[in-house]
Length: 514
Image (cartoon, rainbow, N blue to C red; front, side, top):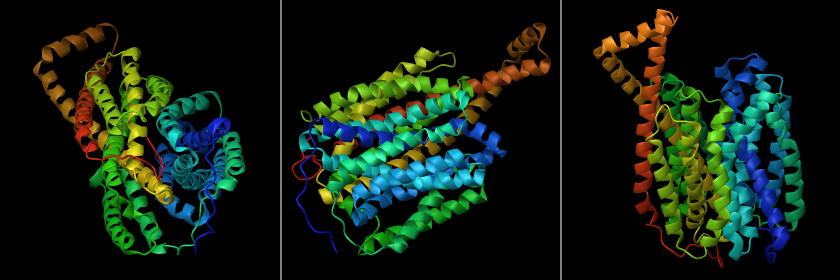
C-alpha cells in the first residue's frame, strides 16, 4: 500500500537551497572520510589495544564490508520508510557508532562499533545524492550534484592527512569523536529542513531471501578483496573458499532478484540504456581512478620515505583543484554535451597517468604534487557529468534505487581496481627485481667497487649489501609504478569511445535539464 499522494513541495531557492546543500554535503563528507581516516592510525590503535597489526586490519575491513552490503539496500529501505526519515536516522546512528568507536577499550568493541558505523554509512551516500536531486530546481541541479560529487572524491584525500595529524598530536579516539558535532548538527538540520518533504512510501513485502544472498556474496567478495593481497590470493584456501561463496552467492542473487516480484535491489534499472552503458563507463573509470588514489600514497610511503601526512599533502592539490573547478563544470553542463565534458575528464586522468609513468626515484615533492592539479580538473569533469548521464531518463520515484545501485557498483569496482593494481604492482616489482639482480651479477665489478666504497666509509659488509638491496628494490618498484600508470593512462583513453555510446537527452526526471 502506498502512502497518500500529496503535491510535491516547491524546490528550495536562495540561501535555504545552499544551506541544505551544505548540510547534505557535510554529512556525506564525514562518512566518506571515515573510509580512509583510520588507515594511518592502525599501528597506533593496535598498540594501544594490545593486538597485532594483522588483527587491526579488521578495523578497516569490518567498516568496508558493512558499508558495501547496505549501499544497494538504500533505495528499497527508503522506499518503504521514506528518504528523509531514513537519512536522518542513519546520520544519528553513524554519530552514535562514532562515539562508541571513540570509547572502545577492546578490539572486539571497536570492530562491532565499526560494523554499525559502516552499515549506517552505506545508506547515507546514495540517499544524500537522491535528496539533492529531488530538492534542487532543475536549472540548479547540476550545481548541487557537483558539490555532492566533490565530497566523494576530495574526502578520501583529506582522510589520511586528518588521521595522521590527529594520531600524531592527540589520542587516536579523536579520529572518531570529531564526527560528533558534525553528525548531531547534520541529523537535526536535515530533519528540521526536510521533514515536510518526505518522499512517498510503499509497504512492500520484505525480500528476506534477496537480503540474505546479498549479505552472503557481497560480504565474501569484500573480505576477499581486502585480505587477498595479504594472504597471497589464490594460494590461500581461505581466499579460494571466499571466491566460491561469492561466485555462487552472486549467481543465486541474480536469479532470485530478476524473478522476485518485489526485489530488494532494482536490477530492472539496467533496462534504461544510459544507465546500463553509463554504469559500465563509471564503474571502469572509477576503478582506475581509485587505483591511482591508492597506489600513489602506497608508493610514496613504502618506497619514497614519505609519512602518511606528507603523502596526503602530495595528493592534496587534486582535491583543492577539484573544488575550484566543480562550479565551473556545473555551469558548463547546461551549455555543452555531457559526453564531451566527461571525455575531458578521461583525457585529464589519462594525461596524469602518463606523467606518472615517467616518474623517477629521485622525483621531489613538487614533481609528484604538480600533476595533481590536472588530476583535480579531471575529477570535476569526470564525476558530475557522468553521474547525470547515468541517471538520464530515470523517473524521480526510482532515483533512490538508481543512486544506491550506482554507488554500490562504484564502490565494488573501486575495491576491484585497487586490489588488482596493488597485486600487479607487487608482481611486476618482483619481476623487475629479478632482472635487476641478474644485471648486478653481470656487472659485479661495479657493484663490488660500490660496496668497497661504502665499507671504506665505515659501513659493515652487511650494511653495504643491504644498501645495494634497498636500491634494487626501490628501482624495481619504480619501474613497476611506471608500467602500471602507463597501462592506466591508455585504459582511460580507450574508454572514451565507450562513453559516447550513451545517447541524449540526458536528464534526471521529468522537467530536468542539464
